[in-house]
Amino acid sequence: MWLFGTTIRMTKNFLVTVWDDTPENRAAAEAIGSTCEADLAALEDWFNYRWADFPYGILVTVGQDGNPNPHAVTLWSGTANSPQISVYGATVGNAAGSAAVRDELARMLFSAELAEVLMHASPNGWNPGNNAGEGLSRIAGAELHPLGYYRPAGASNNGPYSTAWLQLGYRTRDRQDAGAAGPRYDFITVSENSDTNVLSYGCAIQFLYYLHTQLHYTWRQIATSWGAHLCETFAQLTNRPSTTAFTEFSDVLNAHLPPGTSLSPTTDNVFPLSAAPPVVLVASYGKAIGHANPAQSLATLKPGVFCEESTYSYRVVDITAPVSIVARAPGAFAPRFRWSVNGVPVSGSGVTRQATVPVRVVNTAPGGSEPAKDGVPLTISYLITDLPDRSQVTITNLSFPGNIDGLDVTAVMTEAGAANLGSTSGTTSVAPRYRDYDMEARWYLDVAACNPKSLGEAVVHRDAMLGKLFALKNLPDPSPEQLVDLAHEAVRFLESSRDLVSAAANDQSVVAALLPPLSAALTRRDLDTVVGLEGRVFRVPEPAHAPEPRGAPD
Image 1 (tube, rainbow, N blue to C red):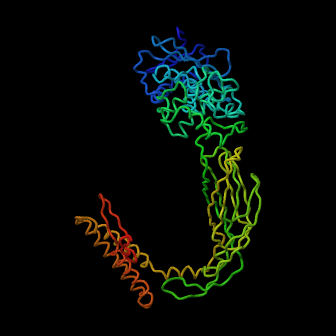
Image 2 (spheres, rainbow, N blue to C red; image 1 turned 120 degrees about the vertical axis):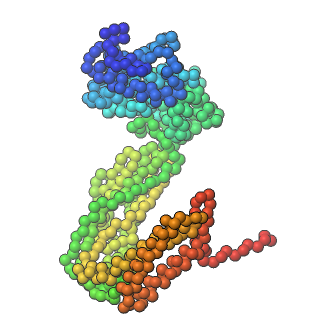
C-alpha cells in the first residue's frame, strides 16, 4: 500500500491500483490493466492525439465508494500532473453473476473516462462536462467494450441510455435556446452544461450515431471536429448550415420512431434508417425425404443419343421438401412482415399451420413431355417465426401433385409504430422438387451404354482447345510452351472425336447430328470480334445482322 493504493499492474502509460485489495477489486483492476494500452491506442486514433506527447502517465484506481451502481469519475487538476480515473461498482453482482461481464464492465467504465481525458487534452472543443462530451464518452465505452455497456436486462446503470429521450412525446423542429421556456428536446443546437441528464446525453448519443452510421463519418472525423455544440460538429463535417442539424436528424428519426413511441431499442444505435427500406429475402432448402409408392407404371423413353426409344417400368417417389425464407428490411428499425405464398396469405407466428395454394404442375411422369397444368392445389404446412429485425417462414409440402414450376413467396414489410412510412415488399421464387422416379435397373444400364464416355470428353477437349486458341490469337508473341500446349490439346480433341465417330459408326444420323455443331462452334469463334485495351482482352460476338448506317439528320 502506498499513496495510490496497492499496485496491480504498470504499463507504458498507466499505473493501475486498488484502494481495497479484495479479490473483486483486484480482478477488475487486472482486467483494465490487460487492455488499457489497446483502449488508449483506439482513442488516440479517434482524437488524433498522442498521449506520448504528454509528460505524465495516467493513474487508475478500482474500488468501492458506497454507491453500489457502476460508475467512474476523473480528476485532473491541470496539465501539471497526471489524470486520475477511479472506477467503482465493477462487481459480479452488477454483471448478472458473470466474471467475464464484470471484467468488461470495468473496462467499459474506464474507457469512457479515458475518452474524457483525451477530450481535455485535444484542442477540438469537446467538453466532457456537457451532454455532447458525455454522449461521446459513453459511445466510446459502448464501441470498445459492448459487453460491459449492454449487460443483461435488469443490471443497474445499463445501456441503452437514449430510450427516455426517444420516448418523449414532443420532438419538433423549432430551435431551442438553452433558456427557452417549456420542455426541451433539442440538445443538438445548443448543448446542455450537464453530464447527468439522461435526456440530454441520450439525445447526443442518438445524434452521434446518426453522424457515424447514417451519414458514414468515422469516429476520428467526428471526434476531431469542433464539439462544443453538436450542430457545429454537423456543420463542419457536412458543410451544411448548423441550423439544419437537428431538423435533418429528427426528420430521419421521426419516420421510424415518432415522438412518443413506445418502442424500446436494444442498443443506442438505431441507424441506418431508410425512407423506403427494401425487403431482402434469402431462401434455403432443408433435408428432403422421399417416399416410394409401391405401384409400378410404364414410360417410353430414349436413354441416350445412340439408342432408340424403349419402354421402362418405374415407381413414383413422393418427396417432402421443406424450404425456409428469411425476410429482412435493411434501413427499418422495427420491421413487421406479412407473408403470402402464390398469392395466398399465410399468418400466425410461432404456430405450425396449414394452407392450400394453387401451383403450376410441369411434370408428373418421366420424360417431362406432358403439358403443364395450372391451378393444381398444393397443401402445405408453414411455420412463421418473427424476430425483432427479421421474419422467417418455413414451408413444407403435405401433398404431392408432381413437380411444380415454383412457389412465389412474398413478404410485405411495415414499420411498427410508424404508419406513415407505408409498406415495401419483396418476392422470391423457390422450386423444391416434389417428385422423383425410381426407374428399373435396365434404364440405368442403357443410359450408360447409350452415352459413351467419348461424347463428354470430346466436348471438354473442344472447349479447352478453343479457349487456348482464342487466348493465343490475342498475344503478340506466344511462347513455344504455349504453342506446344495448344498442339497437345488439339491432339486430345482429335483422339476423343475419333473415338466418338467410331462409337457412332453404325448410326450415321448420330454422326451427322453431332459433328456439324462442333464445326459451327469453330466458325462462330472465328467470327468473334477481339479488342485489346490496356493489356486486357475483350471479345464480342458478331451481330447476326450488321447495323444499318445512319444518315444525316433531316
